[in-house]
Image (cartoon, rainbow, N blue to C red):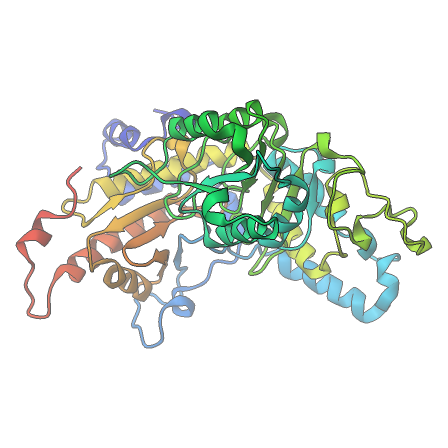
Length: 475
């Protein structure tokens, strides 16, 4: 039975295991999946930390020199091995050429146009044309810069529609923008929450809200993938509904860029922004990205202008006449950080060896396998918040633990060299990333997790409560 993107739900793996004559939970299954993985060679393009470098001080971990189990690409992607060479090359140019590196560069990467080296591949990843993409600033800074153009409220149309549980930085941006324009956030911001008893938003509810409130909505803005639950929003449907009501539509793609397939141009999205340090592996604090649809490539659109957004042919005339570059580049305020661009280039060089289609296929398989193993744990002590429909999630599964259990489990995982992400009070986020994670990583994680849950349930007297024996969820 071939594994494809269409058969990557957790239910698929039971049938595959039966066909192979192995147990679903066996290491043989994981090894078989790794052997059949067409992208397995890409793992060698990354620096995988050893267990001894990531465990807490004083932890006694078995096989300390072996690779850790890194399932945290949703927070910070691993370093591509080619980054060090690229960064060192620029340091050498700076040391040996000084300011002349801006125009005469021994590696043919003049600093005056350094970001051109990362535009084409970035555009491919988000489904845009190169002129619609700029690599600049950081995510929230880009959000503010873009909202100067795209949040222009009027007396009758001034509201912003967003998630109630968006990443706080997004809410801060919306709150400050509405106040800047003289509105009270409680009135101007419509925050959508899941239905009672549910953890994720239903697309039908989002569309109904746009239809009902659309005449008052100036801006519809959602994350591509919800940071907490891992829900992949149906962006095309949201964009279509928003545009039908003449709303501006923008997306925060922090957890989506490099994770899920995007077609920003084809979907008619007005603007979007993203960071590059998660699934794009550009390093901590990596440079941000921005998308502006080509229909907005006009000079009369208000914006916060800077020297790097004006026509490079006349930039050095110093005549104080701003001539915006057609496209997203007109939003660049300052020249980009050369070392940050090189760090991103090191990652994009790996992306260029594959495609988002192939990465998505492996991602569906990895996450489906993770889900299948998690659901096979008896009395497991957690439930999965992330949608079970593979098309409505990216790499990440979010596990909601029974009260008081999560930090005990998280600390036990850390001591075993497993790197995941916790969100207090009760959630652990797990993100197998297709560029460098393996099915064996997933198998090892689940086996360590099972032991950690059992240990966390034992009280100081060595007893396990009856409630703990029953578990938090049975389905």
